[in-house]
Amino acid sequence: MVYQGYEQLLVEQQERLLVVKFNNPRKKNCVNRFGYQEMARVLTEVNEDEDVSVVVFTGVGDFFSAGNDLSQSTNSDNVTEFLKESNVIFKNMVLSFVNCKKIVFALVNGPAIGIGATIVGLSDVAWCSEKAYFLTPFTRLGLVPEGGSSFMLPRILGRSKATEALLLNEPLTAQEAYHFNFVSRVYKESEVDAVVWPKLRQYSQLPRNSLIQGKRLIKEGFLEGLLKANDSECTQLRLCFEHNDFLQAIMDFATRKRSKL
Image (tube, rainbow, N blue to C red; front, side, top):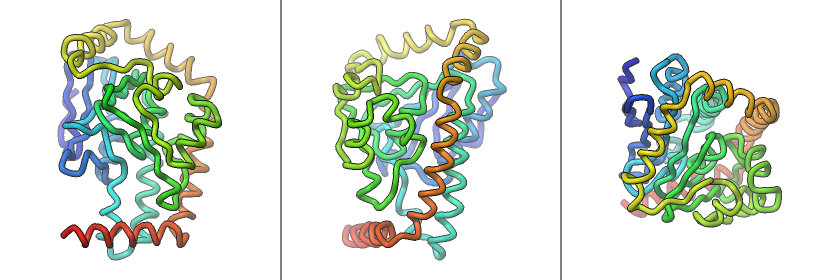
């Protein structure tokens, strides 16, 4: 399969690895609605690619992803309609992670904020750089947890630590993420080419059907809860978009943006 026509993401097949990079370093790899559509597209396409066993998400430059590109909504003539449409796109992107049959790796090369952090919880395996940290500032924006995080993070981190992260805006350092099982390895920059990528290539050579069926069995224990959480989160997000807390946050963002011009 040839992966072409991607503009927001860099997509490259390396033998049985498919490497997907957030490619907006000027904005710290923030993701806009077109980026979400491309994420859904690549995770759907790879399901039909018998030559790929492992999908690796990482970022170009120093950031993994700084999350949602808020400037999209401030540039729209009809913010409410734009956000409703974006909510549908976002929900489908999350579903593409849930429905991906291949092993999905989050190789977190730097800070992961918002959706940059929550897709780590959607991934099958997550490793991070010692320079990485994780932040989910949803309540600061008048929003609620998204990306299945209201289900996955309490399951991974425990309820108390997940509440600190999702509701109280407390960041997770790389070492905290390892301690609380959010990532399974923390790597040094010097290890990326010598250790990390060779290991990922090694994993990709494992029998493809065994990887697919093994992942399916692991997901059976929590799939229903994750799907329900995605539905509930997107419903509540749509309501939050109409609330004064969020509208004020967007206006504050637009004001800060203009002041920098």
